[in-house]
Length: 266
Image (tube, rainbow, N blue to C red; front, side, top):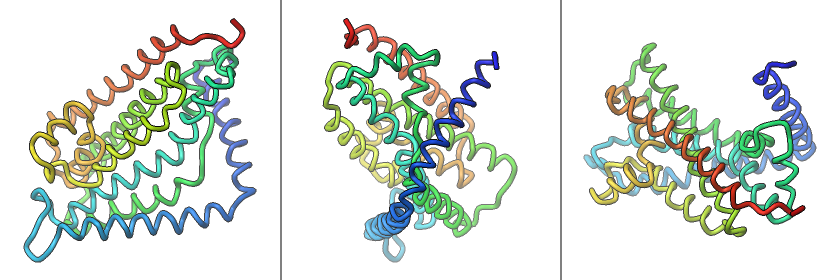
């Protein structure tokens, strides 16, 4: 019981168990989410198909290859609905109601607590459809699975998920100063929605912005390159580095923001 890792895992099991038990009481919502996920995917496919015709490609990406990018994007949307939004949206409430004090007093890391206490079933349909689309599209693109391909794909998907978390947490942390962060969150979501297309489909200035400023390219296009077996080692290492930098920045920014937090009891 004295092992910190064991304590954290035990805490997660209890919190997630309670969260899931509450959601199983509303199973009809899950059915609606399945329908919504399928409808969203069909809408995205229709929109993407507008860029394709006989002999046409989007930024040098064939139709099956572009579907891999869309699959990665759909997977990340599911992760957002399952993990990020249910947890990080509570930071604003804690600041408004003064309950962040109780979080900071808990014998567990505050960022870990705020990031992991809830899990939602609502994003599972998107995760399933995203994975299914990725696998099917990769097969249509003629990709042969190898151990190295699986390893680099897993690494890039994990790096993509961690980078997405870092971006969301950075925006959510601003609620320490600006209680209403809804607009900033919506701007982030709108910007990240560009990740449903290959980064090469955008003009050069936009590509640079989505690579060096807001790293959308590392969220979807780079993992898709890994799935398609086209990712080079420098890009793989760069993607891992960007994810690590994002995590470090989110941690440092949270610690910095707490210096400006005014306790409700003070």
